[in-house]
Amino acid sequence: MNLAELLIELIRRGESLKSIDRSGWALAGVESERIESVAEHSYGSILSAIIIAQQLISDEIDINIERVVLMAALHDLPESITGDIARTDAFAKDKKLVRAKELEEKQAITSIFEPIGNSFEKLLHIWNEFNLGESLEARVVKGADIIDMLIHARSLEESGASPQSLHQFFITSRAIIDNVAIEIVTEIYNTLYYEHQQEARDQGIILE
Image (cartoon, rainbow, N blue to C red; front, top):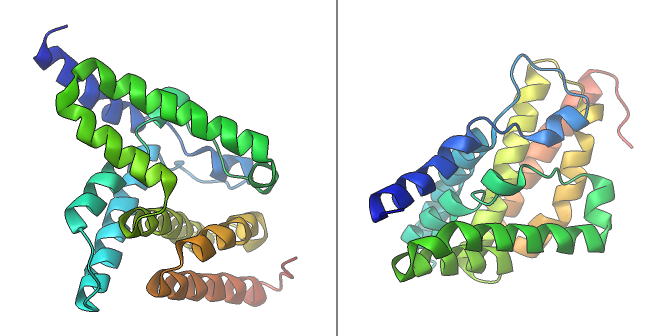
C-alpha cells in the first residue's frame, strides 16, 4: 500500500469502533434501545480527560494537555482488532486474564502503527505510556476512561436500568481510581457513586 492507503486504513480503524458495541452493559443484563459503541465511549473519555486536565492546569499543576488528548483519542484503538473485552469483577480478579488482555492490546496497537513507519512511532510511544499508567497524563486518561463509563452507567440508571445490575461497574472501578490518585478524579468518582447509591435507595434496592 502507498502512504495515502496506509493512512486511510489507520483512520478506518477508528471508523470500525463505531460498530463495535461496549460488551459490559449487555453482560450486566442492561436493556437499552441502543448499546453504546466503543467510539462513543472514546469520545466521552476524550472530553472527560480534557476537562480533568484543564482543572489541573487551573490548579497550577504542570500537565501536557496535548499529550492527554492524543492519549485519550488513541487508548481504545487496539479494540478495532481485539474487540471490547468487558472488565467484569471476575475478569479484574484474574491476573492471567488481565495480563493476556494487555499483551493482546499491545500487539494490536503495534500491528496498527508499525506498517506506517517511523513517522507514527510517537503515537505508539504515547499509547504505551497510557498502558503503563505511570505519568500524570496517563493517570488522567485512565481516570477519564472510568469516569466516562460511570457517567454512562448513571445515564442508564436514569433511563430505567437497575442500580443492582450496574453496581459491579462502580465497585470494580474503585481500585483503578485509587491507583490514579488524582484528587479531583476521586471526588468525581465519589459523587457518581453517591448518586448511584441514592438511586438504589430511592428504588428500595439494597446494594451488596
